[in-house]
Length: 366
View 1 (cartoon, helix red, strand yellow):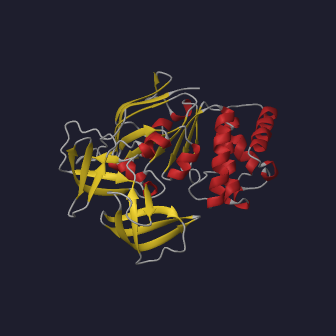
View 2: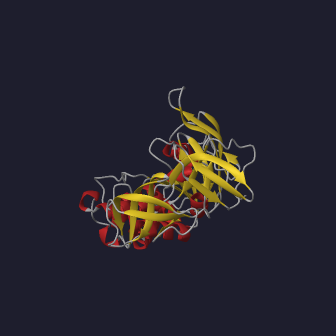
View 3: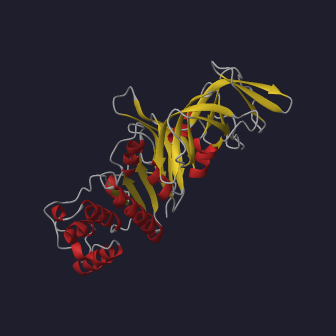
């Protein structure tokens, strides 16, 4: 099982703008890593350079210590699945699966055996005689995965493979992809803009934005210890609340004064403040880190007016016009909540994010 290293990788299509800017990423052998980010962040360009489908402007990509910049795509022993399935429409499923093995000049008997094995693994044995246009979207995607896996490569690359599928099929095939990855024990690089997909599949997640790698970590650390404001905003089931202001130290606590208001928050948790301009800060508090109160319970209890209520299972996301500005609070659903009602709430600072003027998180306990 190979490891993959991107070393100072840059990709420019026009010689002026960088689609990928100085990417350094070490993918461990046998790992399933997801490159996650919005459209245009450089994730697919990174994958295509690894596959040999795009040239590298600067830097080196190596597999098991061997630089592969000038190795042809067909010689890299890499299997890839695309979002659009890329099946041969004039061939039935069995022949679609056979093509990579025919290219390797395997014997017919061995090809038939491998086709039956992979079809059984992906539960498409009863579809082998059908052509792609006779299959559902989920079945076509299983065939595309099967054709990738049948090559028995050491590296699997998957570029938004579930993007066109219905929600229930995406959930089903995410489980299938993870199971296959563990069965085959291959190094897998998965591309998506869907953080739920990334969370369900990955050993680690690499977050990219505007061609630059922002952070590589587990989902828990991306949520609790984002390196910067972009990661904090991009990762999470609900948008993080960002509140501007300035900080003062007082005894063993800190006082955060909210910008353009008279509201203050007393923060007793430990905060890193080395070489920091305390007059231009932003605190980040996730919607789930608030408690709704019946009345004022302590000096951090604030008041807000309900602008909107969104039901999410047995929870509700409450949008408030408050003393902290416009914020969202996640709470257990209650029929008592109504638009225009006034409610009290208290923030928790256990997972406080504190961003400086450059957007870097200062409150990392590392």
